[in-house]
Amino acid sequence: MFLDALDGRDRRSHERPGARRASEEARVQEIRSFIGVDPYTKQWKRISTYSGKDAENVCQGGCADILMDGLLACDEEGYNPILSVHDDAITEPPDEDRYNDKHLSRLLVESSLWADGLPLAAKGRTSYRYGKGP
Image 1 (tube, rainbow, N blue to C red):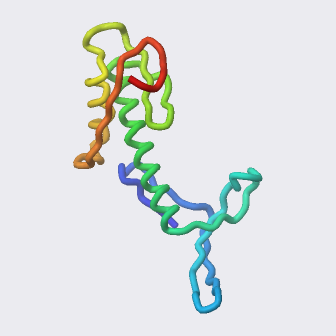
Image 2: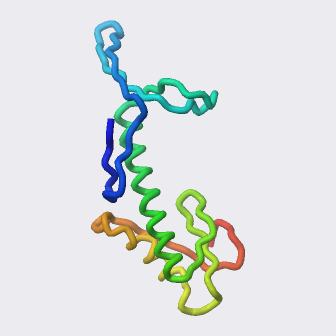
């Protein structure tokens, strides 16, 4: 099973994919699987998957690529990104007027050329300490 990334940079794959048919009374279904790390035992084993999980992985991978492109653009502009928490970008730019949350937000959503046309939005705030809220 291969997936070409939306940004065109790489191809993602599952290790040793497989499929088998399973029947449950009157219903027959195909169970797809791959070799991966079990999140509970931390051991390598065959893990079953389904279309919803695959779609979620594609979506999350694309979102991670958008955030990374934004962080790289922020670094090039001098914002000095130091951390990302989920979908938050934390930066330590110089204390100058040209570095502001509106410009930073624009960099984060407009830096992925392959995502042109996606309805992306970001909002931010300026603070001397990290924290959630206004």
